[in-house]
Image 1 (cartoon, rainbow, N blue to C red):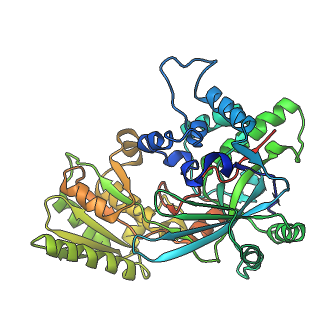
Image 2: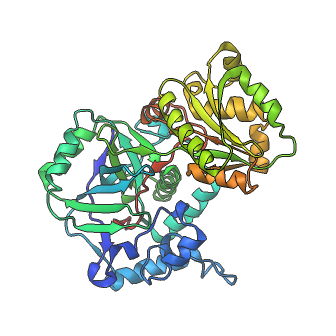
Length: 443
């Protein structure tokens, strides 16, 4: 099913740029204005292409996109970027620490993947995308005719035969190494051995691919492919624009981490905590973790997190912290018929997800925040850090914070392969793939 290919990547020339970590970036959608300013301090940082600065006097001849194209051409002319001499896969390891302090290694490889329509049932999304980011990415792609970041793809290989091949060719010093701003170590080895490359292609051929991260980039590549097909007046499956750069990760190889995304509800006039608790008691088993001082508060928060993780293996379990209450709450969903009625508009598969239960029952019914209200007023702030939710409630930025366990990888797989998508902000794959390690130029 999956058609993948080695390629001759353009890569940063170490003789020109020095430390690789100074010129590669986080994915474009994770680059904050502060990060952009920091990245701009290096004259060859990739941010100048993938998320360049706009200026008041920009026009059709000089703008973010034209500058991106000129910068790419200039760097190639000056040999800031140089092209590998042979088609290769690129073995990609990420060594990182979890918030708990535990250390993991996520292993995969970078290659090209054939762009497929979703209807072909080869590539499966797991979330919906927004129009705005795709327009911006399409403009960058039109101007540069190059891909600078990889789409994060999941595949299943329980026997780990592909991992074995990759490990055999990553037994020496890496060709590239960078430690990013989060302390994640990124290691890359070239794999140009033709027999190994062909073997991997054969092993991948019957495997569906699930987009973990990079839905906007994939759909941008799909739209650009269709533009080029229309301009050519024919379909050439071997054309460079028929492929896009991907990182392939085996779901059974270990090292995969999905972090939870907690929900901070902004202060609302209509919020009545007593009424909310009465509502919750109809569908959830409630347990409180009271505290009298900061020491007890820290202990209660720690106990809540431990119990959420332990009990969440058996049934959907949430944490809650509300302004004006000297206690945390644990909510365990009972899964009774009354709760099922509140989710009758949701497919049976999605009803099993914590994030669905939280939104369909607690947020929509308990708080009265409909999807339309959320889309218009944006009353929810999405947070990765547990402590940030507590702090922002204490500082008055939120009325309530709901804490979740992470979505499991098997849930992502089952939903995607069934042709469904998860609710917004259901997954946060960590760490992110760096942009600029390899570049795929379409010309």
